[in-house]
Length: 461
Image (cartoon, rainbow, N blue to C red; front, side, top):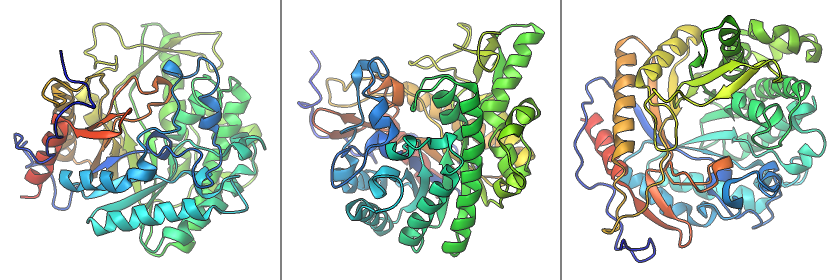
């Protein structure tokens, strides 16, 4: 019978020998990193003055999260960040993309700051720099303070000002050491899932609420860019967008129209207006009632890079009863899939990189790519995640093809460093290069960690 996680022997070193992938495609200075987010790993939900966020509220609603899981403890990164930085150093990554928890530094979203929360990110940033790892800071990875949600949240136009004030606090505190800053992670995801599909916090199903939130998040982005430019000399500012090809599940005109609407909401509603000052045609008329004169100019501010998160194509069919006219569908049975049912299609990754390059004309950093599974620790105390290695190898090769095709890709961050709280799936899915035993908080680097370390070593030659 396999050993339990707590009984397993010493963790294998991350730098164990692994086949060195072909790295001939990578330009000099290509940046390899890992990504996480605050709510998914930090824990310490009630520690040292942190206020509640919308996910703290949402996870306590019956039936929302698999197994009733919460992010109260998660990976306990709040208390174990030095251990996690040591893992990153063994991997050899050049950068770490993390998010600041807005409720940790501003417990009520505005007003009085929380010194202990601010101090935590000082320690994290300083320890990263001491380890030779560049901090990439994301202002918002979905954890709006609950006090601001109570005032209307992203549906309130005032939210743009709340976010700008928060951005100013972060800029003044950390801008002397952090130069790569993202405003938002995946606004197309948290607005669609949170305000109209009712799959994530704050758990709303209302088309008008969705459109208001979309526009106000865009306004918040523009306001934050201006603040960061003013307060952080030499700042390199971007936003992070999840882009997936949207495929009609049927062959009817209505299904194709449904896929175009999903594409507009998921892929284009935020970068199109942030970079080119225009909402997609499918949404422009619907957004107009929530706009004021000059809004598009307030949103469209100069950016330095495009953050791309990509996993697989997504599928839609027409549904006249749905708020936006489409139904979200599972991948067809004919599509190769991961252990958690997501499609595997490296060619779509290559094509997405080329499309983003042509459309937005900005340097691209792949800020998330990876795959989930449910693998346990084996009898030897290891995690032999060979499917993850195959997935990463295929997608990294596709990125090399995009580079060869002219895409200006400057870096790649694996999602994720650690197994963590995966939103509605709770702890039932594992995306990490490092296995986390949630009962003991023991970290065990997986076979994929050794593979990624080999990739990074090989690219430095």
